[in-house]
Image 1: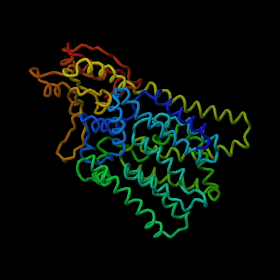
Image 2 (image 1 turned 30 degrees about the vertical axis):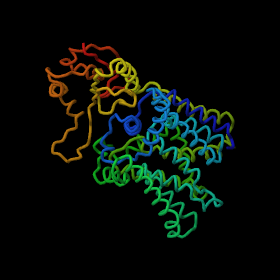
Image 3 (image 1 turned 45 degrees about the horizontal axis):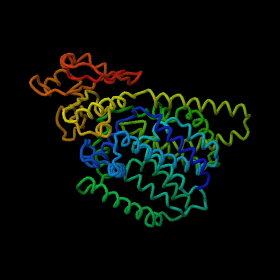
Image 4 (image 1 turned 180 degrees about the vertical axis):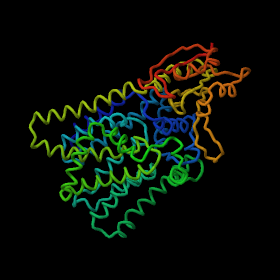
Length: 487
């Protein structure tokens, strides 16, 4: 490997993120990867409705569960090891993706700077999110894309693209325009490319993923089809919140890019003005616009959905900033560099170290409690569904319950999921689920802003732990998390 020092630098940065990132981003980081892998490896845990219906690919959880099995065989399946080893593996993959980004970009120094300082990539690059895996593989595929005439006949990137599309069907959205561009620049006949490359690679990849998913699921299932049926035909995603069509333009993209959105907007205007000179950049811009358009038409929106666009933006900005720096004064270059660096470090550190850390920190004292009383401990999480990790962080088969939020899959009239039912009338829900003559949980985990409404049941408990969560509490998420123990 050439430029081994650059690769080592990327490895150190991504491993540093494993240590620094101590906060929660979205529940899928645990519930769609670690929790599934834990159940596969240790035969206990919780599978969300997505896995029951078979709309998720088992590829990522199976890899993690294989690692778990190795750790178990070596008697090294300590809870902390189970938490951090998958993150380290993802960090190493992200580091390799960084190196591919560096090789792909012509502006080497600026490529290193932009990918290393991008706050969002530092924040999620070592997380076990399927979106982190998707973004890393997207960068690797982009680096193998035939951007120059010498490599027009190369199609290795298509294998990665096909893999992405079966494990994350929405990858089709941002790869569709690039595959069209590939057809245009190769000069081959459309039918030739379709029948010699697209169809064979697609069929082999889909067949392999179907075999893997069917084996893990226990019955024949094509997860790509089930995913599209649930999220497109049945609009299940809308159950978890909606945003206006312009959300990605006003909130999503600016948040993901951070300070980098300023040079990106300026450079985009320059590319459009001189579009005949920047064919490849124009193709990437077209891909970005197309992806944002499609996602804007979908009501359910999240920051992480557009994460694969980040490397495309960084490629465009790093190349053009490099050209600008050849003519700019050294003082101006240092000033711009400092602004970009500071603009990324502040959100990266705050969001990685402080914001929303309570839902992870609370698992450590709960694990200690479970270790002392594995047979009698009984945890009740009175929080929005999937607020905390579960057995993947406890690694002890204790009795535990959380408020669920499954969508209305049976189309019941006046359906209310459990979490909403609880928040509509907390004391009534507790009375129905934990009558006075019944068995009460030994520990209740709750946000501080809800605890004041649970005076009836909490009168039997005493607070034993207060854990900081966020400086920006919301209606259902407080500033602190309390652990109450049955008195």
